[in-house]
Image (cartoon, rainbow, N blue to C red):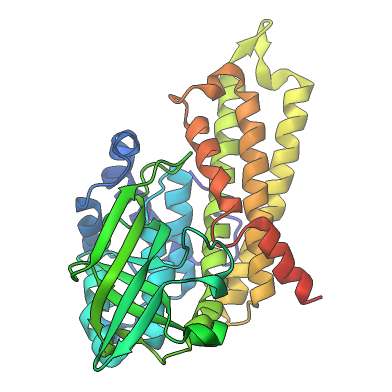
Length: 380
């Protein structure tokens, strides 16, 4: 269990909320983790259960059916899911997709979708990455051409989280291909639109329970009212929302690293070699001491970043640094923790194997570590 007793950013009401989230995970997530890993997807009933428990999109205002809570509540959900070893797409819906509609959507879009997202009735994905385009969003080829009162969308997307479950997709498309970043728009596409198709559920190294898909758009016609915000402002909206997305990744990375450390500490206390506990060897204690030190610094930095974000002061460069630091920390700690398990760490029956496997993508999605360094470096 995560120890939050020394974290000053959380108050009593946050701990009550955390307790509710832990109980929910204990009933609705932990008993099913292994099956979801085998199936490559969580069951749709989880989304409804999340809605009933009030742990979807907690930041949405009360006027739109939400709780109107600050990002600390999102962070609690992300921390607890990551510590549990769950790779569901819940944080994507709550921390990323919801805000595009809440902040930039029309009154009609907010009325139509936010309540359903909060209730778990609608699962949302955001389609940025394309088969030939990774971190360079300006290089996307998916187009949305205006025809009368409609947009007609053509293109393909890949590595889309929630792609199999999604009822609604926020599509990043070029409405003016010749204008580069200024020609990018965000358009809502309902999954029942003619011409929309899901590809296979992609076979990943880790995070198996998180469905990740290819999506295809062949002359998909949607009304112009499905445009989010203003035409040509999509790239600006993405840049404005990326700090929270990257902070969300940092939150999960830190909690996952803590779980890996806790697993290693528990294992080395119990497992014996040469007549004594593995923990009694100096090499083991030094390895754990190094991890504990990194985690202590990590929690202090993460809480600083969360507090900055709640105050509306977290910059894009600071968020990139947080994502870089915590994802790299997660991978170091998970690898060291697996090593302390010896041969057992290579067995999937031990939680450390899943934690290690799932960690690898955190240095890639949301912008690779190299892109984070570039973002930070440009601001120097």
